[in-house]
Image 1 (cartoon, rainbow, N blue to C red):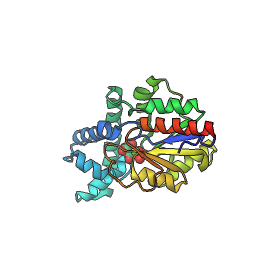
Image 2 (cartoon, helix red, strand yellow):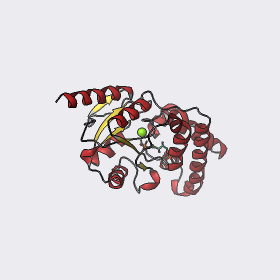
Image 3 (cartoon, rainbow, N blue to C red):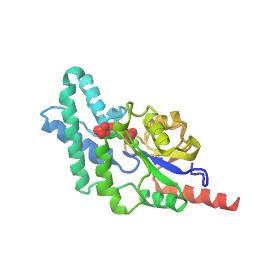
Image 4 (cartoon, rainbow, N blue to C red):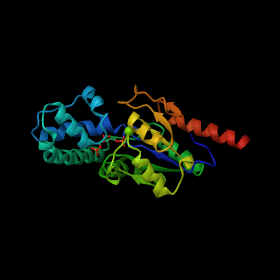
Length: 239
Ligand code: XBP
Ligand code: MG
């Protein structure tokens, strides 16, 4: 991780990694949208932790429909609308200013920039969710802008499929040796490793106790990665 002179870009996952958006925004937005749609389903944190194993909000709704004994094909058109309503609710929560980036995020992006390392975003959430997070929580931080943004709409297969990471490398015209990844979930870790990238995991609210054997680094907060970067830079300078 963070090899000065070799790594040109750090690819950040969004949900759980840049901000705790799942518990602070996606989950309440799902429950509001389900209620507005007149569906009796409500998800508590334990249920949502389990459902998060399925990447993609629409796919998550389909899975829950099936688990609750419904025919997902019959409900698909309705659930598509529920998912769109969920994302509108998500944007409203973001606009309220309720979601802030995780501790150390700004410092990490600035420290990377000081060392000529760019940052990018590789998520399989909807593009509108990324845009809401950027507009209300990140752009006020006056960061350098991400050099690549890959979202759920840019891929045919969501994480743990490696496609999102492969699309990012292709757009950047960089190799796997020139990039590394920060993720919070096992699905994200597998996606990045299958694309050939090294991965640091930052533990998050819903995925903190998953298995992360394939990770190069495991930390509790992003500020620990600032310290790792500083140490790598010092070692490279003294070599
Ligand atoms: C995060 C997800 C997303 C969000 C919901 O993916 O799984 O599905 O929970 O987003 P990643 P949508 O691993 O890339 O963070 O409702 O927009 O799908
Ligand atoms: Mg994530």
